[in-house]
Amino acid sequence: MARIPIALQLYSVREDCKNDFRGTLEAVARMGYEGVEFAGYYDVSAPELKKWLDELGLKCAGTHTGIDTLRGDALQETIEFNKALDNPYLIVPGLAADYYESLNKWREFVAEISDIGLS
Image (cartoon, rainbow, N blue to C red):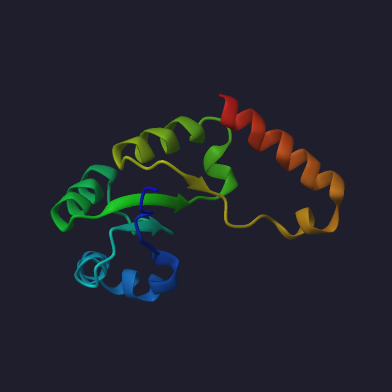
């Protein structure tokens, strides 16, 4: 059985990332993590982030992204950004409150996200 690499969800250290994003990634690498799951990019470009990951021996294990980054014209930009990171997974970590009030809203979301996945 293949060993699953261990990555840190950067949301859990988001305050550290806000204060010193590069330094936080360096600390994560020193702790022995093999990857990170992004929860924001702190105005750092994809090529720069990829460079940092490569320098630190980290892989992108996914990223939290809002549903709006997957809609319309924003989708292609989101795809290109994440391809540059060699990111295999886009995670929508939460939705507007009205989604939690209606089964039909969930059905609409499932249909929408399925269509996005097929595009």
